[in-house]
Image 1 (cartoon, rainbow, N blue to C red):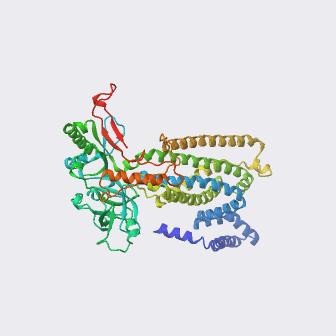
Image 2 (cartoon, one colour):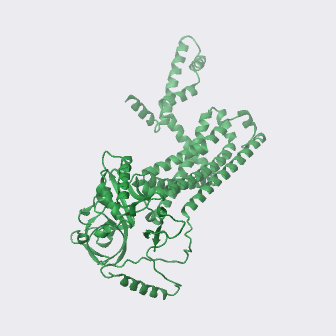
Image 3 (cartoon, rainbow, N blue to C red):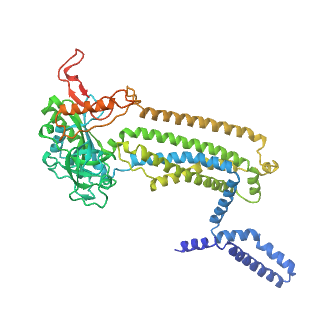
Length: 603
């Protein structure tokens, strides 16, 4: 408590600095007068008595300054003086200040934006209770390098036979037409098993989710919608009871509204409907089209889960060799499954912008050192009147701090702008569901980055320049550097240029790697091609003949549109979605064997 009171008293001197100086000077005069009076009593003349008192007392100015530092917050006052002086110097050189701030702001802004993306997608936990317990399950063939979707029959067997899960759920994307409202819409939806919301641990803000028996065809005319869809169609204050829409020609009751931040499996999904499969489809092991997630039971871990799922996979291989031979189960954490394909791209891009920041710091360090060298005479004069090396270093670092804070402010504004662009363009297309925002962690990273640049570009020049040779600097007669130092300056420039080339080359290579990661040659020309999706309601188009007649009519009309050269239809677009696959059961060439017959993808 005493230390706190002492510190507060010191802070008060910032507002009464002149008064404290006067008080200390008065105390000094009082002590000198007392000694002079003692000397006069001993028989000294008054003038000699006062001179002797001052001599015996010591350097009045030095003692007064030391007393002021002991009784005041001197370091704060000195820092304020350095800030004022540094601000004045930076204002006097607007060209240098603007160039340095913009250079650093570019590096800080890019790094801050990339850190926001990296943290949101790779580091931030999924927005579900105990997200580390959530896993993604997929089928994987012994001859395949990648994991794939799951057949309906295998999913139901996993669900019934596994004891390591507290819940297992399946889902698949589904496009649908919504009518029965003021404005018909094309929606992105998901077919989900009733357990999905329980597995994720998310409750609706209004209403309920699906009951266990609502995946039966007779009871599947219910839906859960997103808050965004509800507000857009019915309004946030509308009553939930009795509200319904027509989805693909079927009147569907809305039973629940999910929270605004719920986005599974992606932000495009606005409606969830039960995965209602017929008995025949539930027994289908060849059609692999479901995504499966599970929540690990308390007390179990992912290693135990993998072992138990491998046992189930071996059991299914023995029971159904025609469809399950060679097929196992791949189990990975849900977060890793959602971000795995993007991890290398994000880390590569983050490394590239980090090199960009290093280039910026390198360039500003060179400019800063050159500017500081031109001030050698100023530093020599300050050293001659008593300023130590630490005082000069502190002054230079304070100026660097001002520059970095200005650059950091501009960089955070630039990073915020970049984040808004990312959120408005590519966020909805990401397989994961990141909430990319400039929150407290991103702001802390930006501040740390700004302060770190002080060390990177400010400390070395400050230590270099603070080694003042008083005699040499004062004899130089001006701010320039003696001829003997020109070689060192040339070496500095050469080193800076060389380092910039190295960093630029590294950034270029990383950028090229990133471009290669995101650029895939599809094998066909995608220019001047437009696509649209059509989903026909089963209630109106029950047979394949009706489907074909509708598509032929649409294609004829589209081909008549001016500017259209040709038009066609396909079940699934290339490189998107899961096409139908069939197992080749009979050997058709000498080079194939019964154990390596391929699957045939059909569109």
